[in-house]
Length: 401
Image (cartoon, rainbow, N blue to C red; front, side, top):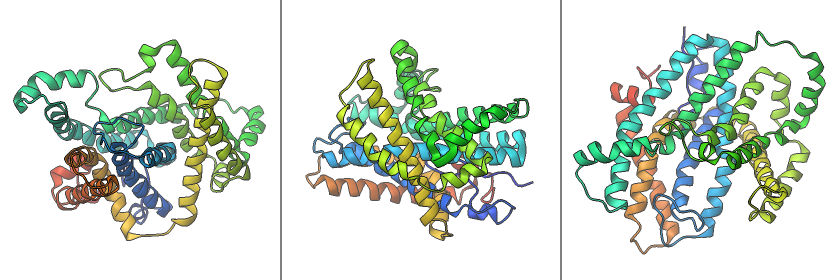
């Protein structure tokens, strides 16, 4: 039996690639190769933009900044992760139905937990050492850092960094398995069919997704110690879980409901009008805070922006990128390595250019080019060619697993 493949993406999600589909009866999802490759690369762009953002203070922040990079960060942020989780849910349900819970769990644990631990213990530890000794100006030996400082950083959850996606994905897999198990025991609520058909038509259900943002914000006001920040040494972040869970559930539903797939493969007319309206409302209410109508309207409008933007992103890839491409298949395979290694590269290269007097646009391009060059080289010359590294950082025991 062939094992289901795991999407090797920045924040890996499940997908059946062209190479996988040639060995099975599964349909080919060429646009998924393109989508995960480009969305992964946008993660590198997003972190690079944070260095030069005029409104965000990141790990490395250049004193010369621009509102352009703030806008670039904001635009990428609204659709990138929601789209990833939709795809994750879709292919999780497909794999569960095709291979069953046992195989699904075995493959997911290896493909996600092994690279997660390897990156946390090696790559993120080196990044934390760099941040402590160089960025925070606290020189110390590596031995002293490992023995005295690193344990405190782990307890506070600072080891997680960009690996939050893998942790959240594992939690969503547990949700998917639970729903898969419960599906056979739940009664068939025939009286709910008209309601489901109503919200499925023209994808009106997208207007319900922002309710998760409202729930989280209300909960954060009631119990800020629980809903703000990470828990259990960084293993759990309730904000990420609640905010992105609807997108994962949408992906599960999308695979099970063929009628929904037909609706989801096109953009309804109302979405083109609702998106600019939501942007306008969010802009007008951007300074609204507290527990009031204006603040809730701001939160809901931002959720609408994310939901509609992720749908538009999905449809555009489906329509214009649904063809085989050797380049995107290669980048799709490399995307897991790029995701795992890019964060430390962006931090180091951004720091090295802080004192440079060249324009920030050239600095940004230099960070991007250097990061892609290093991460792709690591993947091509090390990950693909050394089995132990391929297992540690891609979770694959062989080149074709």
